[in-house]
Length: 364
Image (cartoon, rainbow, N blue to C red):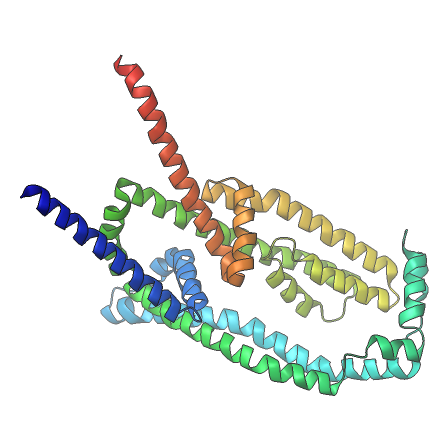
């Protein structure tokens, strides 16, 4: 009789776990299109929770405690994200007309080889030869810029419109979810702790701490360090005379969140200086940019991310790149968090194994 009860209990537990897993998979499938927005909300909530607690402590009134602080911080995040995007969009629209005029002039007259091209060390001859073959004459310039025209840009705009609408929807879902996470985060965590204790036992608290530390370290190491990297390289834009240095600095700060991403922007700025006949300034900017990137990616980021997450920086880098390739930008933060969980479980199991091996010796 007892064995039958035990078997029925085991079957009920297995059925409950199977049903819960199936429902979870169904929920993930239904929300797959908006899953990045939800992940962004959880990442931002974890990263900004200390700031939210400080903001909430400004007043003890029920309205501020319950709605005011979550709403204010959510709106502040919306402004901080939307303002650079709006500024970049205005700059693109403002420069698009002059850019198309420059392309039309190049098609009509060609682009002469800059005198400073021959002064570029090691590759000056190759650069001048390539320029003569592809840009110096009207026919070559027309062939080179053949894919750029009003019709092509119009088609690109039509394809870009639905994608921008989808991104705006994801951003709205992120903000809405973030508001409720700020408002009800403590209650949600209190309800999740018993479930985590049942699933992982005593390991649940250390694993949760590792995830939180990994998110904090990744945000500090990628976003804050990337922002500082963009400001420092922005000084180089201003000194060397790059057109629109503020726009280039903002673009560098955004792209610098991705490891080895900043060279895409400052190399473009260096090429722009070459086109303006400022070869030495372009070389100096490229050298300065690579020096800053080298120091940042080899000294600052490993110390910030690896130290906070307490995992090797190689695993952090693999988590960043793997998360970026599979989940997009939000994978920059989800990947290291998953790596932190993996390392936490690995260390916990290794400690248990060591204890199991040493205890018999100690008892003997």
